[in-house]
Structure formats: structure tokens, C-alpha cells
Length: 177
Image (cartoon, rainbow, N blue to C red; front, side, top):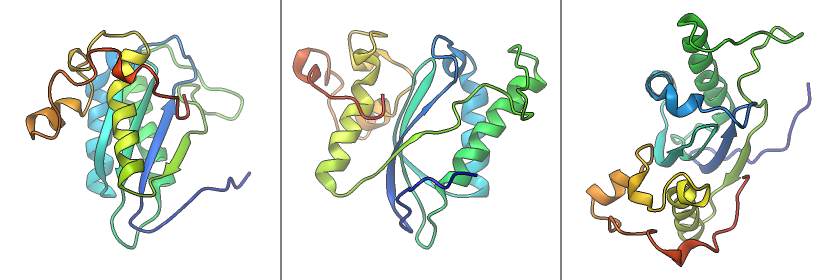
């Protein structure tokens, strides 16, 4: 097995991009309840904080903070992907088949990970996450996308509901996407 070089700091905060194999699918939003359940289940088993997130039809972005003395985000992602996949298979929702290795071809095996280095880096990635549905043409205003931590940020007074509704963020560059 290949051992990828990944930054693994106990109690670290990380930005992730996780993709489905079929980049034309919409499984993540169509089956959002299964995905939410997978996250909740894994959070109970192996705690982590979701700082910011956005779920798009075929990929998601998340900033995750791990507990002190813990740096094992790969196992968390493995469990989240497995829980979601099992839910789809059990409900026979999606015609998933196994590959030669006995794995379902739902998720891309790898994911993009970036360790958040400071407050500026964190804010840049939170902005990127919240603006992503506009970037991909799913909505014209950030507030219109329902599967985003943006709404939690608005509710807590950290951001205005009209943020990202114009061309201010069009220069946001891609992170793993």
C-alpha cells in the first residue's frame, strides 16, 4: 500500500476536498440525510469539530478540527465514506457494483488535505468553502445553497446573509477542486 505524505498534527485543523468517482452524479445532495447520518455516527465514535463545510452534488469541502492528542483524520474519512456507501447499498438507492478489489466505486480513493496554518489561512478557506456553490454555478448567491455551514455562520452573526452575492469573490482560486 502506498503511504502518502500527509500532514498529521495532533489537534490540528485541516481543509479537505472529497470527491465521488462519478463527477456528474448528485448522490451527495440527493442522499444528504444518509451523508449527515454518516457524519454524526463517526463524530460520536471519533469526535471532531466541523468548522465549515459545503456539500455539493458530487464533492464536498470541509474544515475539520481534531481533538488534542489525536491526528487520525484518515480513519474518520474512511468511516464516513463507508457509512454513506453502506447506507446507499442497503437501501438499494444507487446501482453500485464492486470493482475487482471488492470495493464499491462510489468515492475517489484519495482526497485533498491541507493543514490550516493560521487565522488568515483559516478565513481564506472558510470563504472558499462558502462561495463554492456559486463558483460551480449551482446558485447565484451563497445564501441560496442549503447544504453549507454558511447558514450557521449567518445565524451566529459571523457573516452577513448577503455575503458572496456579487462578484467580490470571483477571483477565489481552487483548492483541490
